Image (cartoon, rainbow, N blue to C red; front, side, top):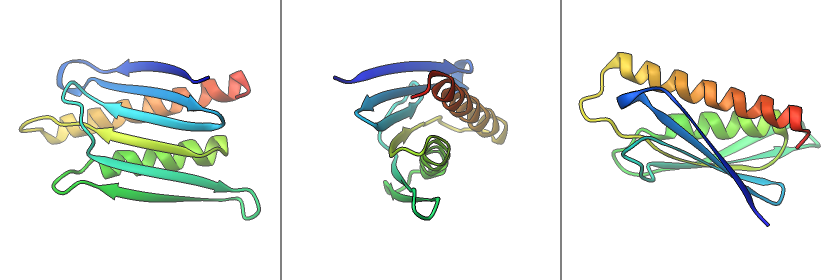
Length: 123
């Protein structure tokens, strides 16, 4: 059986949705806005022997979603010590630097809240 949850942060052009699906011990996380798509996919794995986390990344041509996908996959896996696949697709036409910063802040807040909730729930 799979379980899923979804949260959002931000407003208008900088609103981000963070959706998590549990597949056994593994996590699949979707990060997107109103213009959802697959821009980048990152898979992270924790090695209990070395205590290290590694991340693999695939980015679609012309997309910059790799920053978000890799960052979240690494942080979630390092913190929770479980495999995570992050699929990110955020698009905003004529985006400004201020909007990029707001989007990244919303992604960080959502990631942090998810990790804290997981630690509290003991998952």
